[in-house]
Image (cartoon, rainbow, N blue to C red; front, side, top):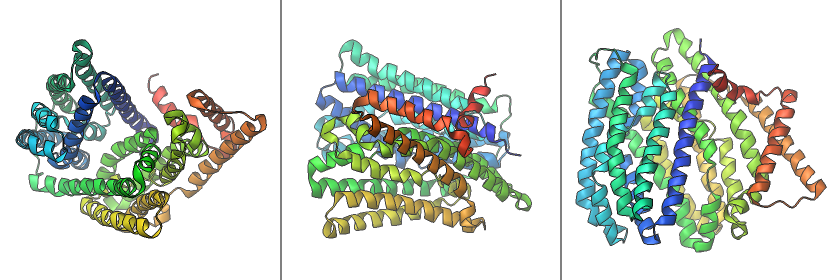
Length: 495
């Protein structure tokens, strides 16, 4: 019997780890942007861009294999798999480092920044040290020890913040000082990660597994292709709006067409926890019981995610202009329409279809779907420019494409598992949550109109958040929605 409460706790720990990573990244960017001049900061950001782009290729999708293969083997064999994959990541990191060192000037030329070549050569040893650290999430989610994910992410990001930012502050340094700090902390992160990767296997004797590198790469490499096609999809709308509608419209689009970080944290944490569970259930699908258990787990996870995400989305839809102005000033008030369009996607991307596809081993389908989507995104974007000449239409088209990928993937999975499409979606629960959130948002809006309040700035936005939360919680019983019950297991775990 699957314990929903335990899964909630596991997902909460993953989300807390993601939150700490996000917060520390924001703090780091805020500090460095103030201490560096624009040239140094631009070079530093370009190094990050090059590293993160090439990481998709050189990591070869290997971090994802842990959550797929580990649930299908004993813990003793799992130890062998972790060691084997980590060695491959070490080799891949070495190749990555050599590639960066040898091609630094070529990359600098492509990005039209001569200083970038020097920076990349100094940075080049870091991939060798960091690639073997990848895969922590998949390992600990498999063995239901996600609290270690939260600890690792918080500790590692804090160390990175300390070692990268401190030399810059103390020595009034340039981006080079930040990279040297990054190099030192990468050594520490490697040591910590290797220690962490052994935690689930303490006291166990390594036992050889039958898993081959061919099987590993057969699963992982399509994910690399999917990631690259995903980059092509994301860049299409940015390219067309930037090229055909000017820098001012592009600035409004960039500040408005964004994801709410908290939504990504919830869906990401759900994916991390569900992936190994789905893989195990599908692998052990004895007498068809696995499918029923999978469906129960899936619907429960979607309902809990909707309880958290849908009220947030509804609130920001009703307060999109206030949010954008509070963040970016009145200058970017026009970004509110793009923000509202982007929010609509969250009604669909709450359905985290990737864990289902990956657990079924359908990474090739996942890659093909992204490939076709990339072609459609670029062709469709061009046709919109020619015939509609509207940046808003491009934004709407982008959301429609993302929603279509979700529905197509879910339809594909339903056929594979011989389960009716609509059984995957808890329609009644979704409807109740949306209705309740809409009524609370409308009541709050009417109150504001009645008292004729003039709202602007972060303080007023926070007041509205509190008022909206009070309205939701005070009327939750009428709709039989237990908002507090979603997070209560995390706190009860400490008693």
